[in-house]
View (cartoon, rainbow, N blue to C red):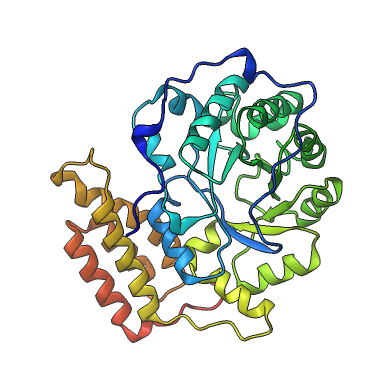
Length: 365
């Protein structure tokens, strides 16, 4: 494993808001985004997109960006709990974006400085999380209900750091408050370097279909890059969206949990090649390598007695997506949840992917 790209001891977590972090009257121009046209990236997913998973996705090819799990700006500024661990990444993951959430401009600016001091390439603002415990604190998607305030947060962050500030948002708060194009223009004026848009509202959460016509409207409303998100499950989904909508790239969440080779397969299609075939051995190897990284890099806070359970819980979360559609996948998920040790977990995976019936997923499941 490569050494971490950041040094935990180099951060002063005792940031104090200062007048210099107030939004300026004329925000500076956006910093260039380190992304190639048509970039495909891993969307931020709480509890899922840890450094180990991000590295393994990068190794499968064609991944142009990874975004961390979201972390509280308040926790970063105050150095609460394990918040700094969310800033850990390796050189292998670059370009890497760290996503933060919060509702106070000065605290978000200070948190952006913490992210910058760890060497991240991008700091991203979460304006898309629909979870009530986030939204009720004037953060996440609730910021879309106060676009002027949301823009002031971006302006404060842009003034505080010298790395690109980006925003991930949804279509809007609900079907009566679909304001992504307007908010995108406002954060662009505040200095944002790019926006990513999930084509559902907060009220929809993950139900219904993502509205890619709305995403296209956002892309047409601004001059900064727009990344589209939502319902990108198969390689041809990515191909279709990159070719048919004016987005600069895509971010993929649940689709990459189910198929870490998704970007490589989409790149094959974009190049006019048949998508590469993923074997049962490939899928088995990915999980075993993920377990190995988790075992070797588990947070020091876990004692030996709880270490195995932490690894099992991480695999349980991933397997909820990764084994979907495979014959016997539901049985494996139950068995993983009940695994008493890492050794037993590895044996379950070995057996499952050695079964001929588990070698191909059921179409359409």
